[in-house]
Image (cartoon, rainbow over all chains, first blue to last red; front, side, top):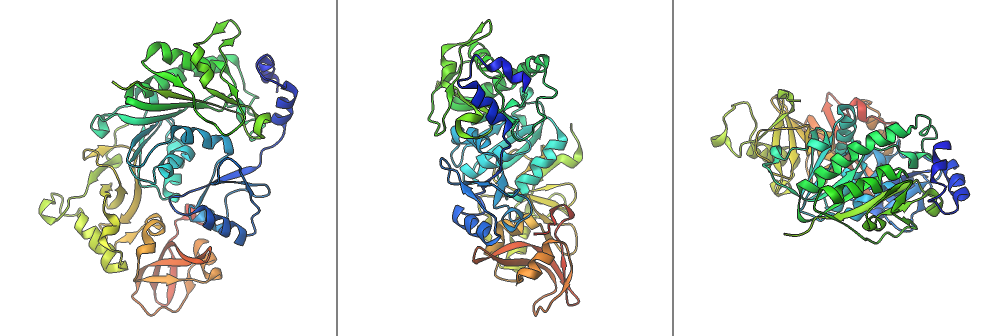
Length: 303
Length: 166
């Protein structure tokens, strides 16, 4: 937990925060509405004697207090997908509509990609990019099992995403859920902080800036970009937003989030960030008994 | 990252537009689903069909310029360039509800054996060949995968990576 000590000045009730980080997180599943309704999934899980708890802010999510999502009928049919509560946030904030073109910049293993497709009623086009072939294989397995017909997969570095395969068309929306130091997943992966170094945080921040910049560039005027991480590190969150505000034409806008959260911060150590980063949301484990998360909504001005 | 095996080529609509004589046409694909399983052609309205490698067809919603060299385009749907075309488990799970022919309904025990990859002796009065296998889930029949019925036996075609002890 030692790397988290540096957040004492920015997190309210720091002891409760640390206590929450030490508690394991139960599995959760998202209903894949491309193949089933919430009601049928509820029935099928009950028939399989799998106990579920509802999630108050999202009726397509269930917590499985005693089971893992894998070996049951609804899973085999692609009716459910293992996805924890906070991981569901960014696609709901992006709010893609049927028929739109959407870019998922760091897509594998595809939990959010397939959620985007489901939110679009599997109508439109989701271009899912990743730079790792092994992880792309997991993404492909998930899109197949979940019966998604609208996802095209590209193998490239998101910083250099090419529009060429699709005839040069831009996007209505983009999801930028970047690789990060994953501090917020500590409840799921207790050894996630073992290899933590500040130089890794600072290095990956450069990659994040490049990917978010590319996402703003390829999103059409009037479009929306969502930036998210599962880390608390301001270097990977507000500092990245501050960079793209400088480098590109976009705004960070407020949005409704039906979960307790704290605003993005404008001061960190000797850095200060643009005031609009307070529109980003920080979700801490002790707020809602979830993992940790960061999510910002950006708009590209209409021409 | 360019490799012939990752190139997707869109299927020609009909025989008139066909350049590669071995490549299936969209018309043939729709006919296959109608003739074998009674799936109406309008089920696939709005989808495009693509071939990657030799014979594996994918179904997608967009219309990128063909050929397109990427890692995935929608979902796999059908294996062609062989005597008996074979639908994928994924296509059957997604579109099998529209099937009216060559559909075999299994009871719970037989369905469990099927997804575990087991072959089983069963009575079946219909055609031999690939069948859509269903079972009841949440009080309604639900397509689960593809079986090959020959010599009084239903052979599970569930791919190794998808087999489960449910």
